[in-house]
Length: 124
Image (cartoon, rainbow, N blue to C red; front, side):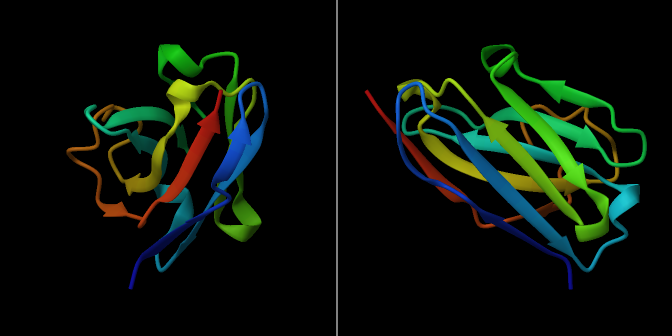
């Protein structure tokens, strides 16, 4: 059974930093791309960042470029999202998801597996 487990969410002040983790199990990790998506109240789901495990290529949505960094620990089958200079508009439920189709899905419609999410709240 494939499982993706997010952790690391919480409450942080604007300008602060936080690291999210996505621990994957039950899949051949290096065949997948792992993406982070977020869902905020009243907004559509948004692809935040993605990494292809096989070649390390990454994708970031424009609003987080320069502030967020996606990385992997292949030995631990874990993907991290390091978030710096956080803004109130980053407040959302953050999900990780896995796909065999690379980092081409910026809305998450074609992802194969999803975690249950972790909540980030950024206070002003």
